[in-house]
Image (cartoon, rainbow, N blue to C red):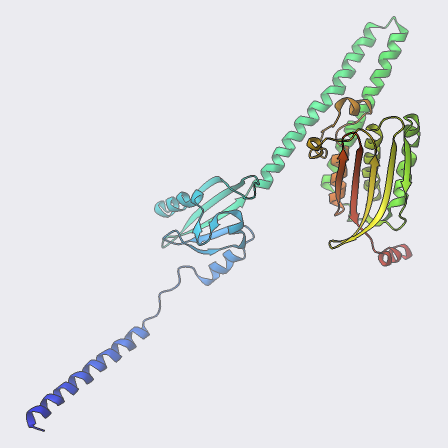
Length: 382
């Protein structure tokens, strides 16, 4: 090999070695540079993820960096992006570095009413925005129900109070006519009784909504309660020529408030008598039911009366709703009885259902969690 070639090779090898050294040095320097910190700290992410309400941290490009479990179900987060309805609020807070508030209706899906959310946003710096949404749907529904209830109570109270006022005037004008006075006094007594029943039902409904019957629950044999209720209505049913029949199970035992269970059955039997014609039959039966959802004790109240139309069946458990206003008024009904039954069933962990056909009659079924025999025996022994 000539000296010139050897020299060139030496220079080339030196250059390669030098370049390799630079590459290695640069690689080591880059490896020594710490990675940029995450946009959302682990502490903040953990806090957001464990919030019960809807919350999320939004990145500089409107991406969702952290979210609570309920953020998606509330509708504020859809995949990795925000719902369009709240996007402008987030961008405005980021741009102006000021908190913001917005009440927004978001679709709930499945044909359900929209979800009303109170959305609050606050900038966190570096383009991050914290979003918290408070679902106000249930609170608004309760407020609306309360307003409707007050309006209905006012209307219902006006009717007997107005009637009593007119009857009092009629008695005053007929002071010289004893027969007329007795007639108007009798009607006044009827209206007073109706007013008293309405007030009692309103108080009962109010108590049901503010107390838990299972806090002082006792074992209840449903057939004993049925007999007690039937004894209260035998005279009324006999006068209307309606037959009352009890089909016993003897094993139907539940746990709860006996007075409330009795009140529920009393309302169902009273309705069955009121909406039946002379010669009809009202049957109250108890039975045990075992299905995939658990063990149940049922009480059914069946009549072969006038029945209820399909349109009205969806509304019979509403407060103050009456299938036949004239018939209900004639029997002293307040329109609150079935609503009370529904509340009692729910408070005891059960349900109330309806089957009915016009001209064939109706069956109301109260289903409650059954008390197992061994538990009942232990309670009786204690």
